[in-house]
Length: 325
Image (cartoon, rainbow, N blue to C red; front, side, top):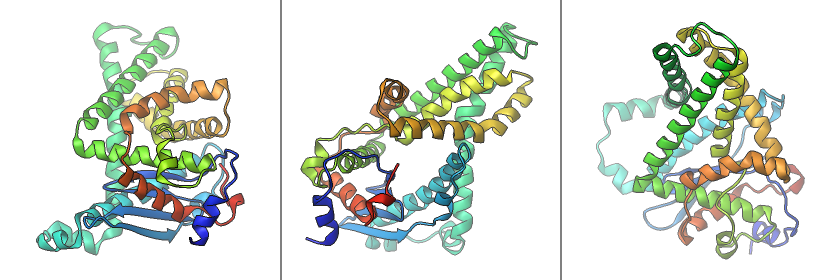
């Protein structure tokens, strides 16, 4: 038994709130700890390959409330995209990768990895903002034009109702997107890795040794999940946009783009608040996001939980005081 395993066995039975989080990958998992990040991938041979490296302290040092959420969101998206690309190659295997003739695009990507990472990040953010922020706004403005309801008003009960309609459209689009993606067997397997991430973190927070048996008994739903964060973004956007008011179509789009960092920052503070406490208010705040996680997580099998355990072990800090939510 190594020092890390011995430390896990001696964990106190008192429940804690860890800062460790993760992301499901292709046949693997990314775990982000206070000081290290780890990617664990199940290779075609059946072995679990774990890659560990130190985390940059820049993002974690930036701790200004209502601004830190945006910085950490973009930082973790960049890390996540890189990890996703890495896991795809690792899960494919060296022999299969060598058998494929590299295209001109593949050669360009190998020569300019930073450019490709930035381009992918911008594209991902653009697609998310366009689909879940701008499209619902445009559809609501179309409803206003066709019906005349609230037309010419910038504030008031009609504008609040229009903001509520926009929010409902946004939530329905999000649920539809999750439901459609969950129909894919490949995505379903990613959701199993997502579930294993939550169960492993819950096991660690419960102070239990990280074994498959202990992880299996935990819930796959977790209040500090990215799904819960996205749902909070949608709820906060309804209130924010109703206060700001409604104007022309293009002005509404510009306002939403400008307010998105603020909305993300508020949502991040709310999820931090809910994740650090357990009372009626925080349970009510977490309930919708937990319900949505039934679409973004699935019960993992034992081999998947083994991968999650290896990723988790690699990022637990030696000093427990460094790991506080």
